[in-house]
Image (cartoon, rainbow, N blue to C red; front, side):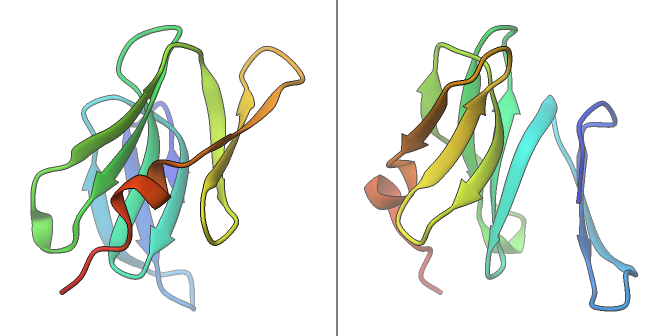
Length: 105
């Protein structure tokens, strides 16, 4: 569960209990969990979006892709992410996941 204006993500258990809270430096507009790895669409600067990966174990986050346009959501299709234009009808696909791949333990 992402909380855009509170700048945090909550990882929930099957019963809805909070398992983990991740505080973020900026607003979050979309998330995807890939096992223990969090992928997030973050808004570091007004008018842009950054797909960011938060590796398991509390290691530092990594900006994987910068988009000079504001996008919301972060849907995963098994190979890439889909986002929608914050102020328009455009839907785009990002290959950021393919470029970096799954985190290996």
